[in-house]
Length: 152
Image 1 (tube, one colour):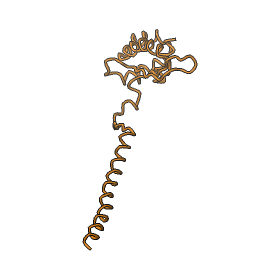
Image 2 (cartoon, helix red, strand yellow; image 1 turned 90 degrees about the horizontal axis):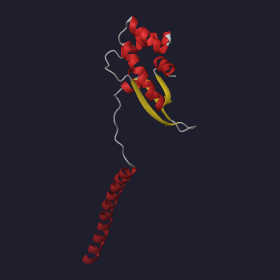
Image 3 (tube, one colour; image 1 turned 45 degrees about the vertical axis):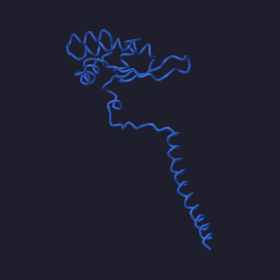
Image 4 (cartoon, helix red, strand yellow; image 1 turned 180 degrees about the horizontal axis):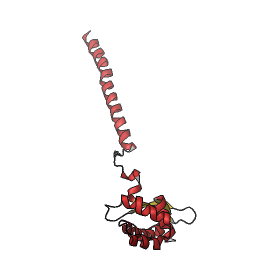
């Protein structure tokens, strides 16, 4: 089962599985990727003894080994997705790190979260200031009218 999952991971670069299987697969496939960094006949034979798939071996020794050539380890990433509907098993992605273009982009701006309370307070404060500004204006003519009545 681990060999088939490793072949799928190498060919597709990302697979969905349970967390327990992903952790076992990580321990299975990372030494194979380390072996693939050195492209020799012996390393190809060793990796083929684990995987038994010529297409996966070609992919591993060409595309994957080029991307991970300078990386010292940690070739896979596990991203938890939640629970499966049927049996409530923990489900996750396991993917090759250097092949995910979305994770490599750091151009996203980090936006600050604003709660509704702060927005409603900010809206309420200008409204209160407007009322305060209007109130003295309305009182001033009344005071002036009283002063004029006294003067007469």
